[in-house]
Figure 1 (cartoon, rainbow, N blue to C red):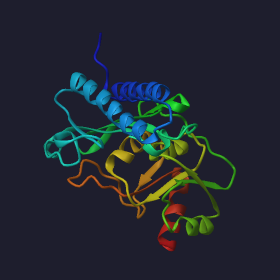
Figure 2 (cartoon, helix red, strand yellow):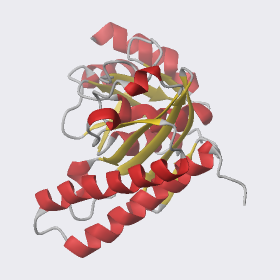
Figure 3 (cartoon, one colour):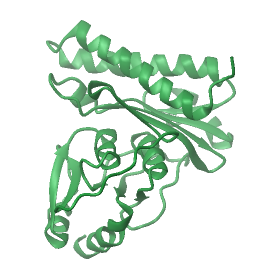
Figure 4 (tube, rainbow, N blue to C red):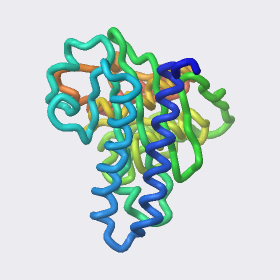
Length: 253
């Protein structure tokens, strides 16, 4: 049997960790949300670390839940040519809330300076989006729909919406919001403040493969595997809306 490609592996691992999270959710229930969230983070992280150690033992890893060389402070990844950037459970808050499906698992590969593979699993939506087979992004004749954080949206976002004639659509995890752009549910995702590379690497890899615009809110490129993994802002949107949205952000910030 031929070994899995990096893209196929990303998709498989995101799906596998997502399945484990669904099983755990059913087993523990929502009576102790804090315990469920903690166990979910740890269980999904363990699944990904074990699988990557077996499948890609020579690659470095940057995981939100990792410690030492696998975490944000690990120095080995800075000299590595291949680094898996993973978020075992993106949207921990939503995972612990009964009925919510806007949480995700992120698996991306950074190789020699760029993202080369990525997958976002949305387990409660029975969906996995991969950069190897990105969906065709539909376009709608409607007011612009912008996905935003339901708990900590950028303070300038209402002004942006007014300036460009858009509606704000609050939803959960970064992966869920970016995926909503990829699938055409919304037209853009704008965020500023409080994110790290693992929050956006996999969604950005898939979005780029689908032909979407991705950048910082000032239009600068998104870069990964930096010494400081904080990457606090981003725009993911339809390519034909990028100039309008970036110009609007510059005007209202």
